[in-house]
Image 1 (cartoon, rainbow, N blue to C red):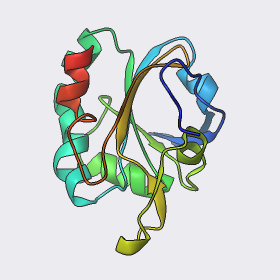
Image 2 (tube, rainbow, N blue to C red):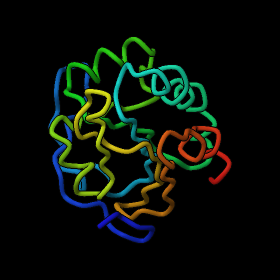
Image 3 (spheres, one colour):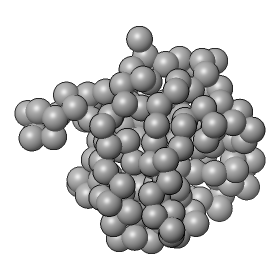
Image 4 (tube, helix red, strand yellow):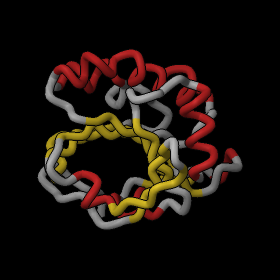
Length: 160
């Protein structure tokens, strides 16, 4: 079942990219007590994700945080090392937290997976964005297959 507005974030382990190395976090604890703008991409270093999705959130980070968001986080079904390298390549610094969902457990728990087998990607997370307030989904923006509109930084900012 797909997560809906008003639902609590399900339990799954994510790996947060930090300067000290990988930091395993449980999703409910990570989202507790603050407002997080989370966005998901089908894959690090893929065309739309690298050219538009992640750079948009890096560029709009200050404006999004000025609207009351405590943290902006990016997740993908990629391992810690890929997420770390992708974040560095895009200059995320302290603007966007990278969360690796290496086995896709978080995407699966959300009910937001996609089959990218036709492109050699296997099971991935769908392209989406959500506003999570103290562990509860306040707003959810899931893209239609192949689209990039409602999960963009600009769209999320317009809804805050």
